[in-house]
Amino acid sequence: MGRIFEKRKYKMFARYDRMSKAFTRIGKEISIAVKQGGPNPEYNPKLRLAIQNAKGVNMPKDKIEAAIKRASSRDEKDYQEITYEGYGPHGVPILVECATDNPTRTVANIRLHFSKHGGSLGTSGSVAFMFERKGVFKFDPSQIDVDEILLDLIDAGADEIERGEEEITVYTKFNEFGQMQKFLESRNLEAKSAELQYIPTTTKELPEEQLDEVLKCIEALESDDDVQKVHHNLA
View (cartoon, rainbow, N blue to C red):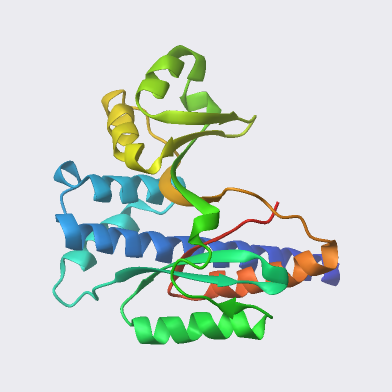
């Protein structure tokens, strides 16, 4: 009974950690959006998107409103969006998207995470060419009939659609992300999440032992408070 309880407790805390990290990430997205375009989502598409993503991770309404109010304050930190590039163990290319109020601290921490786990921080452009930036929209299958609006999705910029039992993913080119967002809003279709992601142009497979080493490096990077997203090309 004790072991089962400990295992459940571990899973529960792990879930809370992921939720807390997601809320922190979305909070920064909201802050950046408000600083750039104001606190009214009606006139700020970037804020509308951040609020939509907040709902997608079940962020409570009061926390969303508090984040917008906090971001409107003069005392709120100004976050810079910076992407770092590097190699994890066994030469796996990694892109790390950050939102930070102190780039000097952040780059030092990112470099440390890489080096502690057998990787290395690279220079700008060292791995970005191995990725393509795309818009990624995720939907609950019960909320969208792809067959009914397929041609409209293509006209709005969809260049790939993945259908799964639990999730439908629509991809767009980087420069057609906003067009897709406007189309979905015009049809009152709300994605679970909508974001720009770095998609690897090729993927890499590793034996289990090497894979574990890379995943530990990725996990360390993801746990950093300044890190928003980590991208890699592991299959």
